[in-house]
Length: 575
Ligand code: FES
Ligand code: MG
Image (tube, rainbow, N blue to C red; front, side):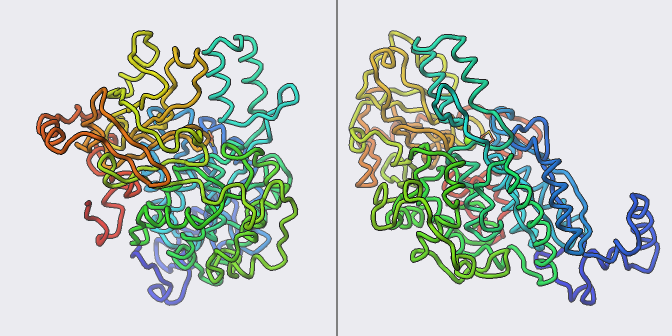
């Protein structure tokens, strides 16, 4: 398939039509093999809708996708389409080691190649857990046949002793308090059973909820899709509607690149900032934009963050969870509130524009969605920091930062790798106090490898026991969207390719100034040059296979961590 597959190349026929109408040997085989599965000649005349079902028992967040797929199929049949389910790889955050980020690009490639290789007319992409929706959106842009996203929905709220629990914000808190000796083994087990009690993805505004909101804000999922809890019957209704709608998109030949544009990406960034969404969304949006041939600079996130108030009162930066956000109208109500800031003319999978979709939408609950004029915080969640420690940028989720650390200078305590961190962080002899700046090196895209979510560097146990709960922490790693604290992440370029982060030594002074957007290493130029001359790359983690491909071709965090060869040729130059 050419990059711009079009019907004129097939005499005006859809891909599926040409597949089944072929008059020779192949048409005979296509029809015969397909009818052997119980489909009739009438069925073969319908638009062929691929349904990408990423069900896996190795991905808890997708455990209900078999059922959800049946509702999508019901919608496709009702609208006169022929649904054909197919699998791709599925990646669940807690299951994939060393990190799902290693496999996001593999899933994007799998999805794109499955779409291109099969003569389907349209595709429904069912995703949920953190990396799956971005992988599918990247694939949708590259394959560019009519496509629609159905996300699996968040879990119901966890409940324990009258308290609402959220994965995984409270996972950290429970394990932290257990480590500090404040809760028993038995209490920890009770908490484990209570926190995740239904199908669905993490139910705070973590990466999965953020990416679901982004799919909707981009216009690639139907309005209201993101926040419906996974077990709620309305999620099944949404699945059926999505199945119906993909058939309309095929009839109208509306494709991802008609929908995902620099303007709709701006809308997605606005929504991310208004709900203090996950820092991971930045990497994914840069990667999605890259597939369009659009180099999305980190400054765009900062500009939009600075002009988008944080108004969605959902954890980890706010108080409530996705279940309450759904009751409060979800993403449509949020978009209604920030409508003056959006590009209203963007086309969406409804076939109408953002403005069309927002007609008549209400904002019913001001405890969940604050007014633009009286927000929770005047700016969005994410700030981009630059300085000699992060010449190509670093991120901080400023809404999750302790106020006393917004401007802070402290001495570095350096860990040279994730293994070094694990070995020494709780050492009683570690020379560290609450003013220290914890630095983790070699945890970036090529370093760790694959940039795991270990940027929430644990507080050293001896400080934890003294009541310290936050410190300035810096790494080239990522953090979970459910993390909190003064965590500077995505430092680019990373330590493992010789970035300045790798040149920091114990005792160096580091200055953080969030309002000034500054991250400075107070070491003179000559000393840094000397350290740089002596720097040696860490040994590569892989010497064969997909791991080696990843190490050789992955781009830096500020470039979206896509593989260079998956970008259009004009974007393939690294800085
Ligand atoms: Fe899948 Fe959190 S583990 S969304
Ligand atoms: Mg996560």
